[in-house]
Length: 239
Image 1 (cartoon, rainbow, N blue to C red):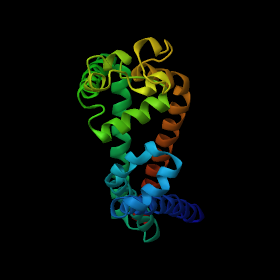
Image 2 (image 1 turned 30 degrees about the horizontal axis):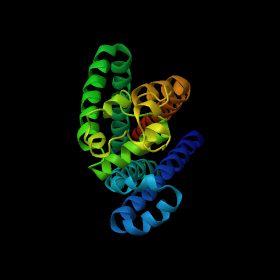
Image 3 (image 1 turned 30 degrees about the vertical axis):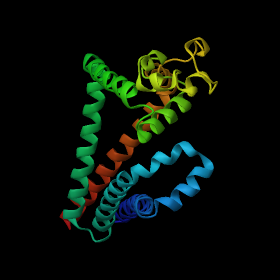
Image 4 (image 1 turned 180 degrees about the vertical axis):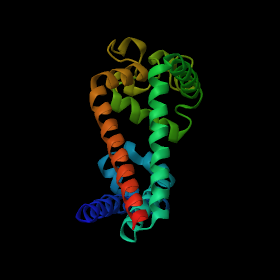
């Protein structure tokens, strides 16, 4: 019985943290959507390029709501010894776990499909860069933030901006491509400035172990949560 009590407490604490995190994320999402002006005033003082975060309010609400449901199912199922809640919790976590495993297998085993997806994504990205960069404020903000943080220019390279609407209107490349030197001409772009795709691949290469480690930890926690829920479910059944 002591082992059972310990598992109940661990289940409650673990899912209680998830629930509190969900409430926090949900609160931020609601704040962003209801009072975006105040949120922006705080955000702009730190980093103007993060203004785009106002548009992820609905995402925060969705993620926060999901975490709250998951936390509630786990906590209620453990405290009230509800087999129904525990089984629902187990099934949801199992589905997430399977989706993650399938995604990992697809990425590792079907590199050709990954290349097709990247090619499709690249064509779409280049199209938007040439037609909408400098015209669509939200898209421009996202790309500026990406290029600044990744120290890159364009999707494949700075040539993505050749014959673009931005280049025709300004007769120059985005200042970020030239470390904000004006005017930003092709001769001013450093050979070390790569496309954002190459920059992202380099980032993954440099931080692949960290990303893989985090993914393994998450999968481990999910697997442990499933096992604890299943053990509690079986113990309650016996009683």
